[in-house]
Length: 258
Image 1 (cartoon, rainbow, N blue to C red):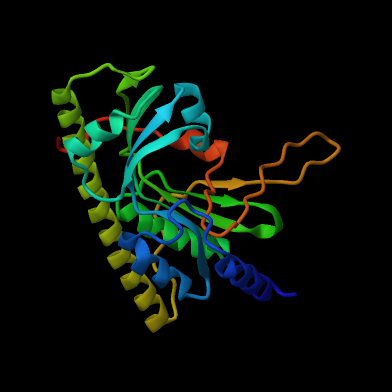
Image 2 (tube, helix red, strand yellow):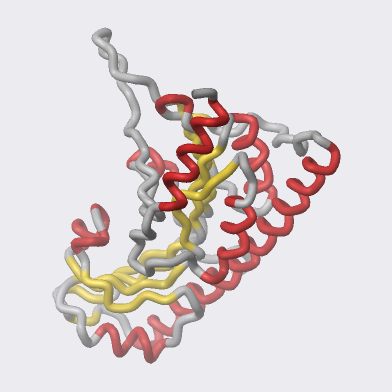
């Protein structure tokens, strides 16, 4: 099977699988973006999240390792009110953590050049923590990520450790980050649509980013002892991020211009 045919097979299999995410569907704020990418033969999305504010309850270590070990007290993809958080905190029995998780999108690309074009658009749109991974059989994945996350513990063994005034302060920051997050998604969609339209009209690829985008090449393990990377699984809309991805993410407490 040629490279193009193999990619189309991967795309068909991935898009036909059930959505295994907690929500079970694509978030409203990224529906048009996901549709735009999946409508082009050189791309398909494997996971996405428009951004969310959450309140998790559990031990701090287990929450860091895997959210499934925590109790989800509250989750919203919209602006969050203090009363909602206070009400959810009443159910906390462990270490409750308030988090804002920004937009994330994983896109399988037909070839490296396609990923580089998409990476350039993502960087110009404000997603400066995005990166490209080349895995087994030449699979090329672009992770579009942002760095303006937020994570703050609020309670310990069910006991609230902060004041309501501080919670109100944190939510103002989280809501500002959510609003900025939505602006970046909209900017990314507009820039990407324009870049693709220009490429299709002129038969040319948009100008790639001036600097070389980060590319991580995974190789098979051999007897010589060379390490190989973890194979990514395009299971519907499940999380793609690996330990290597997590190592790249840096979180900023305050939003820009706060």
